[in-house]
Length: 165
Image: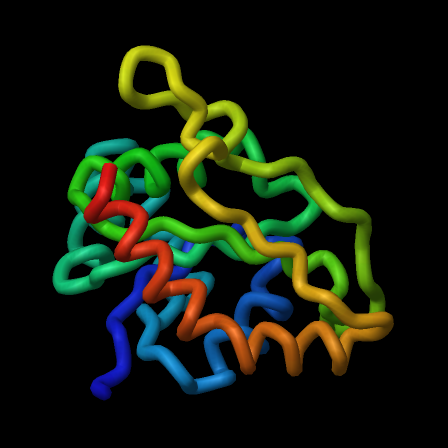
């Protein structure tokens, strides 16, 4: 089986290090994050440039993996990417990453489910159909190992869920 092409969605500043750990697992192909300089250039160009950049990054992807940190839920561009993914009939899945260590060796608190505040089909919460996994483990390594073991299955399941909704 070939690797799925996925779009990773995460709150950049606080979770970039944690997201990099997940992207580097290598069991699925993901979009490369924009270097800080490129992202600053895109954001300075305004909302339409950001929307175009997101659209271009999603091109050819079959699923969006939302890496959920402490403050991911409710952010404007996080929500935009989730909604765009769903509207493009891409699979959508969440994985909590608060238990992974950051570059300073710290873990953080669990954030809210970002799918709770997004609705579709006449007000139905996206969280009623989209899964958001909280990896098991008592430390960062065990949580990383859980993600490495199950992320491919989570992506495949998300695609099936989207195809049925």
